[in-house]
Length: 62
Image (tube, rainbow, N blue to C red; front, side, top):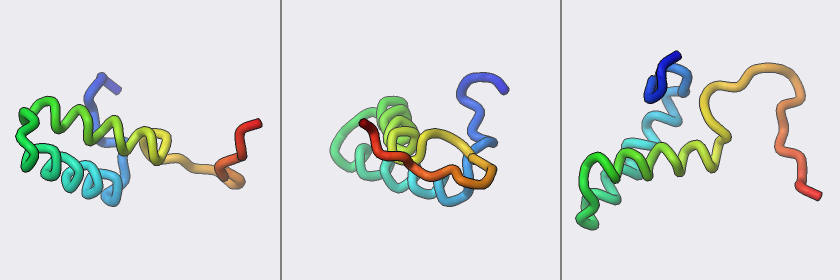
């Protein structure tokens, strides 16, 4: 999968990124930077694209 490919993300993650991006653009951030920040935020919150498997819970950091 090439860098920048968003096919591994769920529809919910894509909607979240779009909403976040619109918020940045309203505040005057350039389109490209707004998109970068939006996807960085989605990755930070969800840990990236689709995850599968039993027991994939967030474990508290020690």
